[in-house]
Image 1: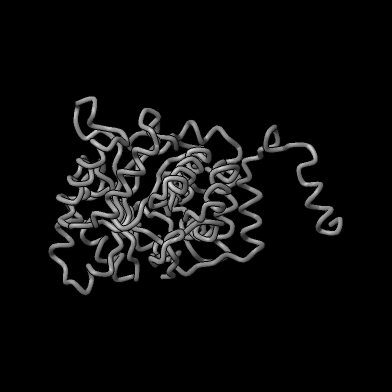
Image 2: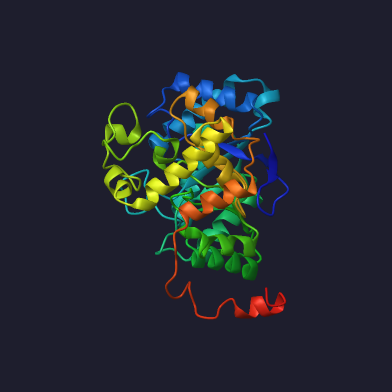
Length: 344
């Protein structure tokens, strides 16, 4: 396992993160506990959860694991969770307000059985709550010793910039990470979100790195998925729904490119896709979302896998989202760069 700094912080985290959205839902508690043990044994240390994962049960499983393992293991854990979405039915039981976040964090700490989490992430932008209120609340959590670092999740480029700028102007603890969806099939965030994070020094913690299973080779043009996979159980579910992806030629170009490199390397397609993502600009750690121990062990094989420049170029070409129109294809936008580079 390789280690990188968590954004602009001095906290070292593994380049692969154990995501726990499947815990107590798609993965039984026994499977979840085995995954946690295997991840730590492989040298991983960043564990990511959220209060809404399995309605809090994911945090409870992690809490029982932390309580049952020796300190020499649990002391190495860098623990991350999130708050924002509804955990009740009232009008104030959601959002990034001071009222909701204070309750959400206290509930997460109770379920996890800890006094402090390393990274507390706001799960999505709240258009109704002033960002200053949210950031002041998070800054207070740091000062109280309830959290160590602040993270964002599912923010757009302008939202990242506003959060960072507001924290700087008010002298508040700044965010150090952003958790977005990012994979070979979802690269549109490279237009504005990645540049925003690079400018602000935020580390990316990508979720859905395998595109809901698309980048593992389990789906084909010839047949709609069936069986014990996420899309097999419901082909219409989520942003990676079969019909949405299968109708695009780009999807199959990406899948074929990943398959070609995997075959030549003698590794799995998942490992190729994870390796490509782990070495993208601004990426700190890639979040794995395995349902089984076998899937996790295969994913962990990407921890020290690095692609050749020619392999990366082939994947880049096949997965290019092609933003040729305004404002991303502004005429003459690269002319000055070429002149300063000596006309190259």
